[in-house]
Length: 198
Image (cartoon, rainbow, N blue to C red):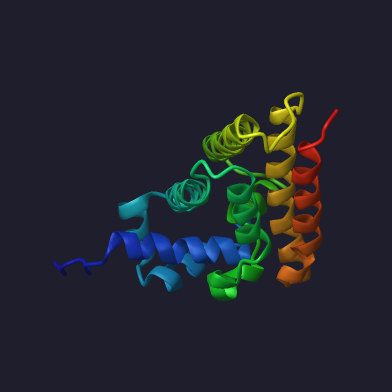
């Protein structure tokens, strides 16, 4: 009996993630995943389950990276920290080629058939996490006098997250980060307006 080929699970998941990210969940085939991971179909099924299971594993990797991004930029610095987070969304050049692909989770949920309830729940969990992190940063900014006492922090946080996520889809559609520049400018105006909200 032939010995199964050894592989590095993390590398296989990373490579699968890039395929889902570039092509979208619906358009990604098992053959695509075989080529990307270097694994045969049976090895993929044995290691990860089917396509949906592998997508869920890859998605969790992407969501974890996004949470780390928020933790890196939102560290109690108020408006300046939020502006740095905005910059990473509207100027994604460090991602290389992937900078033009938008957002893997939004591409998936935007497909005609959407994603599994499990994936949708995980994505919604990230959305709520993102809103909470930005709202907490705005609350700290209010304590420092950067934000007006009567500003609606939850609505502002929800709007910022929705705008940032939307900017990723604009980038994918236009295949250029320049498409997200107006989002960055308008969000800065919003943050400035929170200082004087009446």
